[in-house]
Length: 219
Image (cartoon, rainbow, N blue to C red; front, side, top):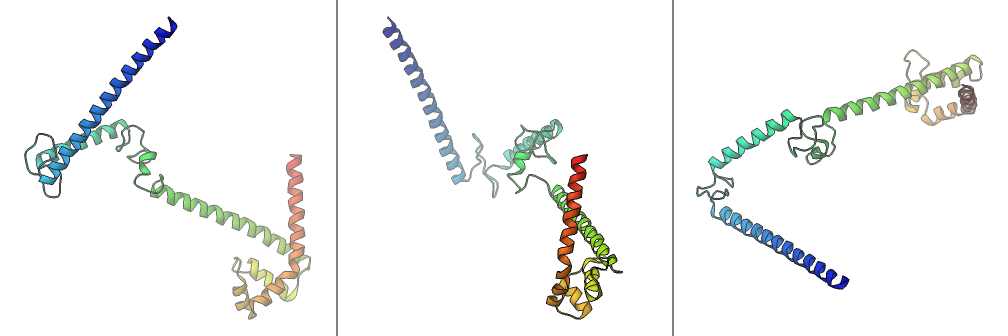
């Protein structure tokens, strides 16, 4: 009994599978026939719209009548999607910073973000780098001022450090070349004059960092 029932079910499934295969084959065959008919119309220079006997417009696949109809249909669909707040390209997802969604934007541009947003991000990152550079330069200036006050660095070394970190009237740090041109010495000589004070600076930075960690742990 069970074996016969199973064979009937298997037969029913096989029959349904054959029916689906036949339907898919008919659909694929119909699609192929439609594609062949479309290609023949294009080759003959007639309108690609089914049932139209007019000639296609120059450089187009449809006649002027069906081109106007397609344009009107496109404008109507575009306006409806704009009013609904949907992507004008897919009509499914919401708009993102424009008339297209974040997925469809990638079909047309390398970055999903618009140009204005990318410029804003670039300016923000540049401002952050400048702020970090100013903060670190202020720390170095404070450390060099302390070394100058304690007279740990004096003479030509003191002048080189003042020019290098911007402790003069200009108020900005300079490169080795700029310091060398002002003092009329080579870049290598500038480096040699800066090197003796670097260990003291390193110790000061380490001490300040340990103090900051202790304060953070206590807080």
